[in-house]
Image (cartoon, rainbow, N blue to C red; front, side, top):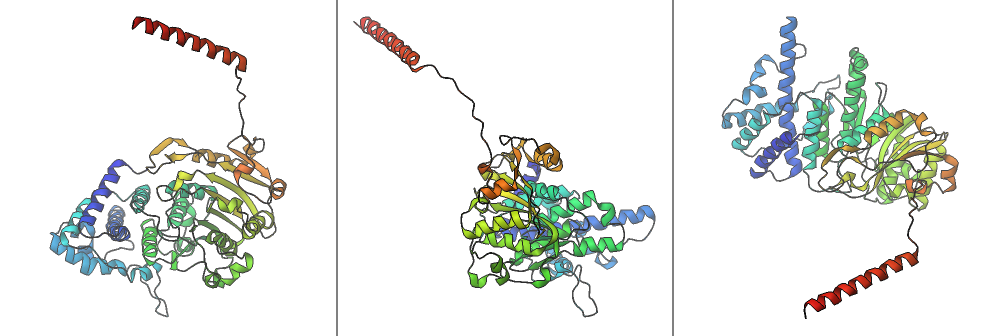
Length: 494
């Protein structure tokens, strides 16, 4: 969880850049990302130096060559504002744009990061602003992975609007919940077709590094697979692609496949049935013309609604046996249109629908108050749904108003994980509890309605009231008492 001290530091840096003339919040985040990355490079190089000193060997895979010492954060941060500005603008920034730039036999660039950085611009307005920001960033320790994640979460949270086409960031604790429930393995090929700043991919990489470090770093082939072949993300915002790819680099993934693509408009046969795990929170509040939608998606379900088209896309991208954890608006669960019903029927009858977690409407505040749910399903193309697990999340560890104040003692997330990982606990649960199982036959009988309220039972406590005659008698006695008091008061007043 982000601390008040870290918030204050970010706020001061933000104010410095804002007053310096950078008024677009995304530009602020982008420029801060570059500087944080430059700082992180120096920290990583320092770790390599310490290891070389300890083992009395040469530095393994140095980030900076001997003639590039002046490009390191620890060196240029000591300079006066004007020479610092010139060094960062003319040398450091061009240097980070070429990182990962390896060439194969055809001369093609080997890093998606390098590809996205080609159009990046250094937009710090003045030497004074740069010097001030560098001094303030010096006080932030970037060694801890949670600090980096919290920092990004808070910076992105300072964007005041949800953006276009219903895009808004997913809270980091919800992302972690979805990753924990899907439990990625080193053999997974993971995709987010609407990746934005790559929050899901980063959380998946952190999970793998935390739980499977021995496997992903076992040998050169394993490292290459983790860095080059595991993570895939699409977006059609070039700024998001740059921030997302740098975010992945900051989290230790050297060459993720993060690329420009309008997922719903571009049919790409090479991506069909390619992925074993999809984690996503796609844009909801939009509709597309049939002409601008990939024809293979419309063949499965003919609709203009983006939330339904994305679900169709996920089924197309998943390989058989692949699983997904995705966020959908509540309307997907109970919508009455032909497209809504046919897609729900497809998930229940043709695939394996595993779970539906209903989330409170305040989870996405202050961006939106829409009610949402997490869908977890496995692609089988041969059915397999026996029972669907429903969970009614009432609290996520934060207040459900626009302030989203931390309330760590009010969180259902640990309970969700515990119950999900112990399915035997759920067999005997009543419909009045927070989680329960619903058989497929019952869901089918309700026209494949997947809203939790359709199946949840509410317990009403019987309340005993006095008989009406007794209540009337008490009222009459009270009125008589009031009348006597009024007469006494009148007598006192003469």
